[in-house]
Image 1 (cartoon, rainbow, N blue to C red):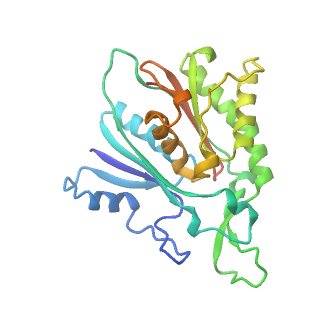
Image 2: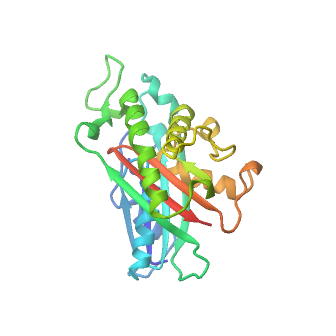
Image 3: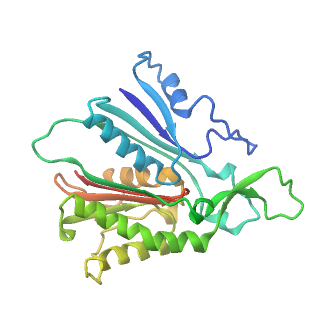
Length: 270
């Protein structure tokens, strides 16, 4: 392994506290636990909101193409249950989770791998749509902060910008919308994800979303931030959703949106 990329937003939150611990980096801790001695295996964290794991894959691919790191371990992990305000009803959607993938760059004649990627950041009014703030409980200590979200603004932002980023990504790959087999979208909530996918297809003049285009697990696993896309991919690859089988040569898309506000997408050939 040439590098370890750990996508996270709150560090290693100490049990029974809300204190985050990000020194040393979580990637360094993983390398330590794996007992990797090679000093040229670089370990670092990225903070990119919920799209962090997808961004890590984009970085791993870029390093591979540049010849700087052929094999990367990309991890996304979060313990959101430890930074929740139990007096905030928005908290019910969040969950804990972790996923990882080894991204290896190889010259291939079958055109498999990443075909294109898109990343966007909007940081004017949007920067604090998701932030840390004091509890909704009136008598709480204002010095203790929890994850907070302006739900309506996040919804409108995602609905406006995510479909456009997805279209840009697919068009850059020069893949027809009819050839897209699956979309692995960040499991924010089912209502938002369905609205985003419908608007994405509308950009191509298609009003009916294809059946079984978008696997979902949010109803079981919740919104685990950086972990939603890799855990969903793992479930599909393991056959947990028979109607969402992947085959060699299939073109799929990863897409995510989250704090920052940040958006990204990948077009990938299996």
